[in-house]
Image 1: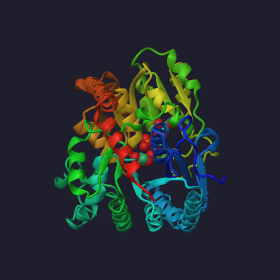
Image 2 (image 1 turned 180 degrees about the horizontal axis):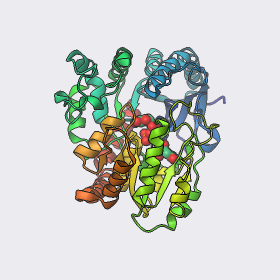
Image 3 (image 1 turned 180 degrees about the vertical axis):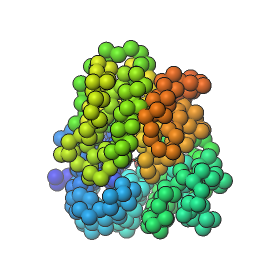
Image 4 (image 1 turned 90 degrees about the vertical axis):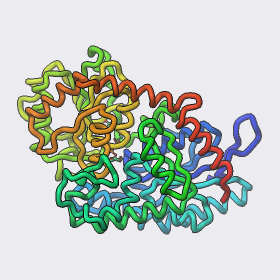
Length: 472
Ligand code: UDX
């Protein structure tokens, strides 16, 4: 490609270009492409830098330019079995591997833009691409950091060293409150269960917060009515502007998530859903990274079977612990007798069009790992959640679902056991204690935030104005 620019149809004016660099994991790729879609619809040209690992399919985004940046291609073969440690190690390895080639490619892009008189505004990068944010700033490119988790979670990132210094971590008592960050408990903090990885976690979080502080702003996929106190605290404590522009999947052009999906979404399950009664189906999915011991899968399966309700279950390859996540791997096996016990009332797929599934009339409740995208998608669809968090920010998200928003319950942490799973499913499907009413109210407030004059709509306008004022 010899041009980095394009001409806005009919106006004769060159579009300003915004560069994007997502962290190459599904839960980070989706919101980055949603944001790119949103800014493209507001008149900006889009260039996406990406690693070879989990590279996007450029043919699904004909309006964007893509710049591949070589990395090591995949998580190292000797990566730790522990999902958190493996992910943290891989993120650091990606930062190291991409640093020099990204510098080279970004410099070349800027040179071409200069030569052609084209206008590059800034780079929007995932907060976890901390070294690449530094590279861009070193080349004089203003940066905006997209954090794909909640505002509460970013507050926690900022407070993490202080919490370690105060002795919360390594964790002595998992159910003790974190008084500086209510409603978190010690067990909700990342790495609470693993003292060995605390040092690395502290270092990474410090670097992430520093990368945000050196940027021109922080973009969050959340909305004011969901996290008013957390957003106010961030605005007080950060020296850079904070833009809560969520729910991004509702603001961006309709197909953004399905086009950024790394796995093929099985749309056949929508036909199955059309045949189910309203609010009758339990949707079960643990996102793209979480895994569980084989014994937990068996207990979860029998809990679902014993609940007696219709279900749609995403059994993703790699869901069972010990096996590296790979699209080539067969989906995990369900226990003997499960299919016979649930015949006629369940559908199992290896990947679903989740946003459409959650928004379907048949949806009754969501058994989820509480990844932030899943949490937002369920909240915006008014679907009550049964939370079974696994790692990272998921415990904290589950805590907010259960304790603050009260639109779901957390599965008892004392071990996954079929009787408890079945009872919890029944309670959430029932919408017990006003849960469904609150979930529907949350859906209404999410819609309000992106409507005319809503908090997120106004923040998108502010973000667009800021980007228009940025120059390389
Ligand atoms: C990861 C972390 O686990 C999560 O906690 C963090 O907040 C973001 O990064 P992931 O585990 O994949 O993400 O969960 P989540 O944030 O829920 O994102 C998964 C995305 O995949 C969602 O946008 C969801 O709609 C999509 N998805 C999931 C599908 O398209 N089909 C599926 O079958 C399941």
